[in-house]
Image (cartoon, rainbow, N blue to C red; front, top):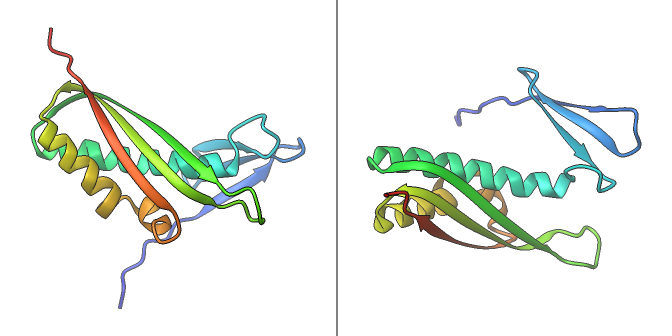
Length: 141
């Protein structure tokens, strides 16, 4: 039998039209808005991919004894115009890593994160074309 992890979230209307706050079980929240006044539901999907894979990249680089100082992730999604639903067709993830890092280690960490470990990207990869790359900004003086 498969082990399953239970996850429960709560979404509450803020009182403004198409505006919500989402909370996890610990009370941490994120504002989600359907009017362009905040982060949209589809933008939260992109942020989830970026965050999920970034955590994995950090973990892998630490295990490889790489000195990662800072990590930024730029992510872009392309959605079809018609028909509705306007699902993502392509997603590109670009990692910017700061530190004295070996390119081979970074490539391995980024590839493993997107292709094998990030749960969010793996759920979408059967229906969305994923690409990814990275840039290292050496922080040695």
